[in-house]
Image 1 (tube, rainbow, N blue to C red):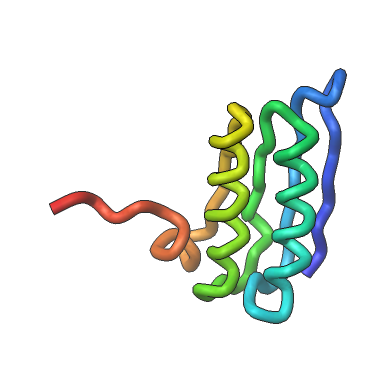
Image 2: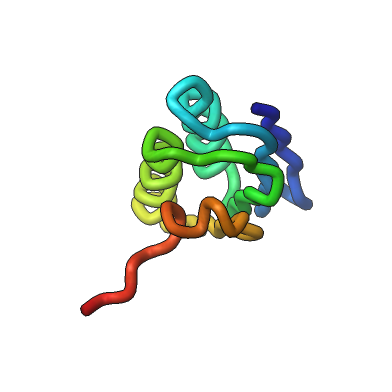
Length: 95
């Protein structure tokens, strides 16, 4: 898995681009990158367009980053979720 972090002006916005597989072998790397970005930037964008595979272990870092962003009053946006990952990256519709 490749993780790229790009900073916006005045450290207000960071963009993390992920490519490859997001699973138990790579989740810790994503957790580290997301935690650092969410702590540093007011707004963090996570671009998942390059993710080939995502399992339940890959979801943990997303949830942890969302929770940290909320506690800090920051924002985390997940964009370009591949179709094969949309089931594990979106909230179910309430019954």
